Image 1 (tube, rainbow, N blue to C red):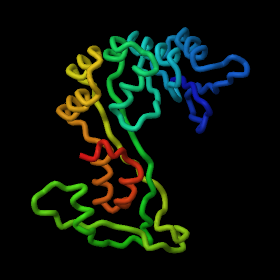
Image 2: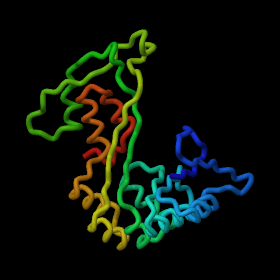
Image 3: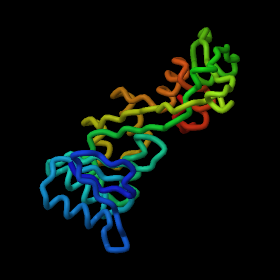
Image 4: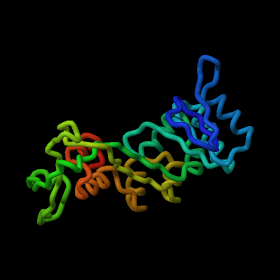
Length: 221
């Protein structure tokens, strides 16, 4: 397995890791071409930032390589739109992307000072559309010496997974409206970051305020 990173944040045994160095013309595209000549089975690209890198990555995926890469977007479905905005043709995106995993790291409630509380109805109505509001318990940290009086200690992740199925591929090729892609994703089982975030809140891992701070409002429903 080979990686191209900028910067290399963690050394991994048994993996060839390469650092991007623009000063000596070692950019993502040049390094990607060099790696492809070695016929690797798996490529890990630290971040797709430009059209040239994106095109090489999609071409590598279409020729049988497993390509793992990152993109900065607000949500997993937005990754498809981002690739189009960069300039990758939809007919290249549709067959090459098999899934998009989105995540947000948020503070974890300190286990040493965690306490339960009952949220108000105005809070519950933002997240539950039941006629009768559920009787649920949320948690928060009081603050202690372990967490430096912040109420948080460590981190936990919110996740969302978009699996690209046949219907979504067809929509991508047709440059369909992003809302149509999102509707198709929902039919295939896609759940947004807020859905996973609420589960983490109910499990007592983080606070409801972190959902508001770390997830897109567009995907509140």
